[in-house]
Image (cartoon, rainbow, N blue to C red; front, side, top):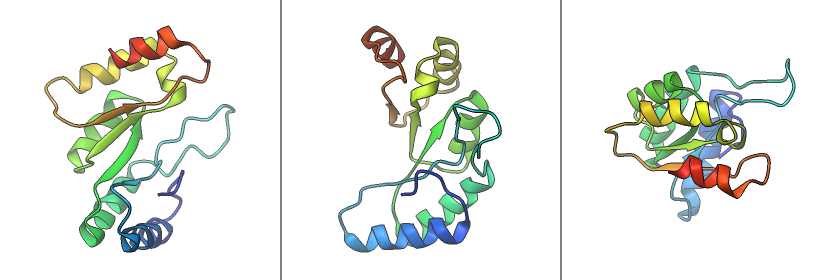
Length: 129
């Protein structure tokens, strides 16, 4: 799916095109976008969860989003998101990783962890643990 979901129409059109290929196992879309510089587009936020829910209903594709806080985890789970991922910037912060891990205690859902922005194998392995 799109790196960044910008409109409902964009996300739904992308979801339908991807589903038609028969080769896609999940629809991913960034709705919370941590950025390197202040003032850059930080995603459309929680409203994107409704768009993902609709895309899932219309296409049958499982959905995936990046989470960076416990609140993101809670909102994504409440919206029925199937897969979560911890982004590169979040992976580099052990406090953030722990907050997300705490929010996921007792939850059975796939969580992907991206490589940190800095190439640091120990940091990445720590995030996985």
